[in-house]
Image 1 (tube, rainbow, N blue to C red):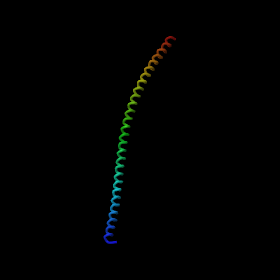
Image 2: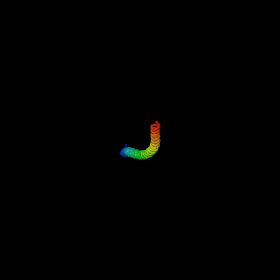
Image 3: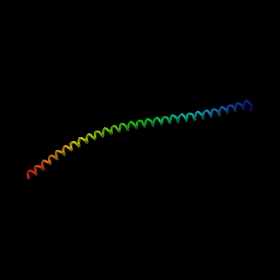
Length: 104
């Protein structure tokens, strides 16, 4: 082989090595970029999930508060009605006792 041919072969081999190194570097960069995009996506999804959970907790707390107020109101109404019936029965019982004592 002539000296020129050896130089050409060496140059082609060097270009090939450089191309492989460049391809490896680009592959590493692409993997790194994909990893970063994936990490950002995961963080974004977590943040949205936290926000949605906080919203759902607020809504459920509001509903629970409304239901508790409604239940308290209903209970107070039932209690007042029961108390009124009890007082009437107490008056009726007192009248009955007094009448029995007076009539005997």
